[in-house]
Length: 211
Length: 211
Image: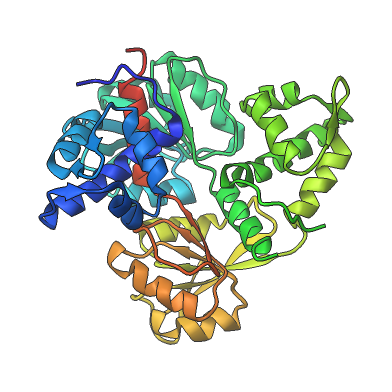
């Protein structure tokens, strides 16, 4: 049940959230749910929810709402929650180290299986049971550990060079924590998380509220 | 030069990016820049850039482009880059510990000055030179260290309770790393960064590309 439709990236980002909230509602024994109830729980306005759902075809009926089990199964399949995707983390500095130990415990379908850091010895070491190798062994170990995605937590200086190497070994996606806007071909997907930008944007919102 | 205009949150998030790229262009000695040049450098489409800039009034002229120094000064003042905002980090687990050590070194106007963790002793300890106290002392120390924003990296279970305490002491904003959608009054701004959701969304994009 792969989707043919092109959905906006903002909608894509909400899919895992919808899935999580629907799981909660299902656990509570709820059978039907309205876009307003989802809206109240998720703090996303109900028009956005209805628009998002419309990308996947008519999933609900007016006055009836949405069938929780049907939606849940739909999102589970859409998100391929059953299939595991292996992740390589590149750059075990302060942030990388935190992410490595954190390792997305709540995600059952993605896990960091290998990491790379220029301070690691060639033969490798382990942090929180995850093997960490010198970046000279990136190409070899990325394949050996069956990694498909990479988390990039290197310095800005190394970001594009590491990306070019990832492109060459056909990495499928990069979660980019560096402030660099990476140049990549269409064959690789990039999601940017710039923590400094988020914090600055929050600062801006706080300073300009209630004026 | 505070702005009266209500700008969308997506635009807000791009402001620090514009600022950073304009600084780079200024450093390179560039005096004028077109929305297309900014677009190429930032990988944001030029229509979006022109729309974003339009929220702040007419900042550029067709065929001329934008004056780099003028824009830079404008964004600097808009983002209040000169004023420091103190941040408290709540929850020094794996992710919190990483963020504490990372401490947004590239941001000159925000810094973590105090942290709280239930494993910290009442009298406090330090991690990377930042004092860490038991959460029982949140109200006291949040004020003593002049914190205005909070980074929330506690467990889901504690997230809303900590938020309620932050609301009571008039915290101005929360950078929420927990998957919980927090209930807050209008007086406090919340930015959500759900790393698992970002990773899942990337997984989804990768699986559904080129089909």
